[in-house]
Structures are given as C-alpha cells and as structure tokens.
Length: 179
Image 1 (tube, rainbow, N blue to C red):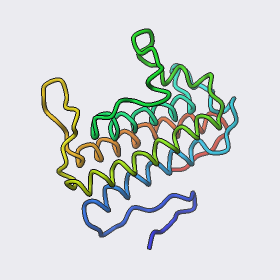
Image 2: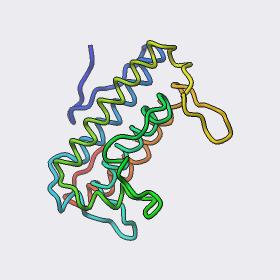
Image 3: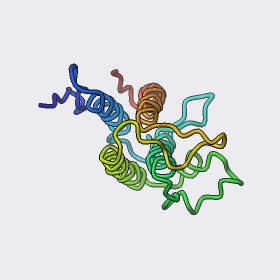
Image 4: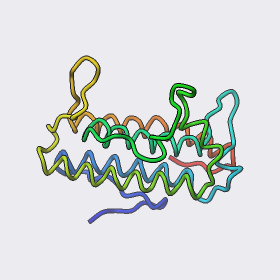
C-alpha cells in the first residue's frame, strides 16, 4: 500500500526491490514539483528571484523537456515531439526556459503531466524489454550508452536539484515552505 503524505506525495517504499525503490523516489520528486507549482497563476509561475532568470514555469517546461529527452530520445531513440521539435535550439539553447514565459499555467502543467505519463509508459516498456540493465538506444557522442538504472538515478538527481530551486522560488512567491 502506498502512503500519501500531507502534500499529496507518494512516500517511496522503505523496503522494496530496486525497481520499486527507484520509481518510488522518482515519483516522490515528481509529486514534489507538482506541489511546489500547484495553484499558482501566471504571475506566480513567472516570478523570479534575483539574480537568476529561473521561474517555476520555466522549471516545469525544462523538466518536461528533460523527461522527454531521457526517456524518449535517449532511452528509446525517438525523435523529440511537440513542442521540442519546433524549437530553434541554435538561436536559444535555453529555449524551454525562455519560451515558458509565453505559456499559460494550464499549458505548462499539461505539458509536464503528459510528458511524465509518457515517461512512465516508456520506462515500463524498457523494464519489460530488459529491466534496469536496458541500455539507451541513442548513445552519447563517445559511443557509451547509459542504462535505464543510470537514467532513473539521473532523473532523481535532476528533480532533487530543481526541487531545491522550486523551494526558494515558491517561498518568494507566496511564502509556501516545506520539504
């Protein structure tokens, strides 16, 4: 049985197999980002904390891109879909961060939610195909390919780092604090 905390996040299992533990921590961090960006309007998602240009809206779009990149592009060698395929990455290497300013809160949340759901499906497919040792089909430039295990740990790290940013940004918007 999954325990849900007071912020609506599923607690990672305290004694489970490797897959359940990794997925449990990734889902906990995904839920933390959802909590830190919940109920904010456009101004809240665009608020900045000097000296950074980072916003909670930009963070949602960035992490959606990261989800799609690792679980779609890298793991399954799928071409990026919408909106990533229409971005001019040469003109703006931080496109996902900067373009979020033009998106509504509903668009940003829907993009992130749908990308997370795609990532879950892609993860399940890779687990069924070869488990945590499944290698990414699109290797790095040096020819090495990370395993699904590595990708999951990397995504946990990505969320954990950005959730720290989200803590600071959210507190600056409306004073919401918490782990």
